[in-house]
Length: 189
Image (cartoon, rainbow, N blue to C red; front, side):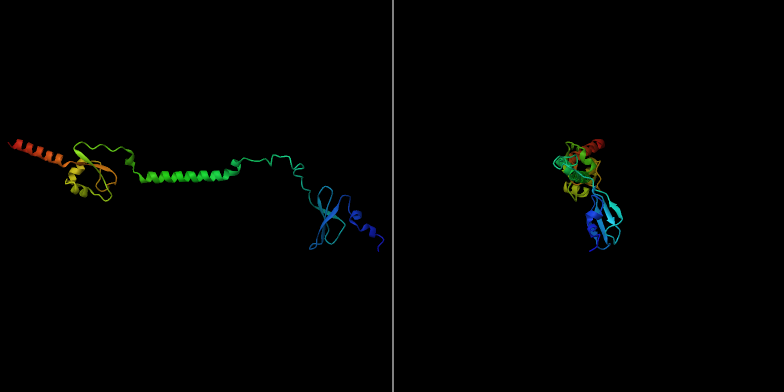
């Protein structure tokens, strides 16, 4: 036994308040902690000797855990749900925009205007899908020219389903022809 064996303990060899807290076998380095919480390491291969400071002590976060601090206040449910509510607001706006776009794309510009009333000498007719001016005129025993005279604004190339046109009455057409023939007879006489 050595005559200095009494100095082999940590209490005798380390400064006041210093204690050994770890050993790294790979690097052969001892780790110590002093009274204020700072960490120190020994030189590789030396248990004692010159120590180098490697870390600071942690700042105490809260000494009184039962007192509510500013950081630990209970927040309202709105604060917790804010990202979700923002996301739902964006989804709602996108859906609203899509419905508005598809509704306005499906309707024509003429749809907002009220349809003019057909005069008493005509009959209203709702255009069906696949109708043409010639089919409409043939099915109602009128000429295409008479149909176009009553409906100046329509184009036979672009008839829109669910739009109304005015068809001349057959009896009115016959009355016009009889008036014209009466005028011709009066002139010839």
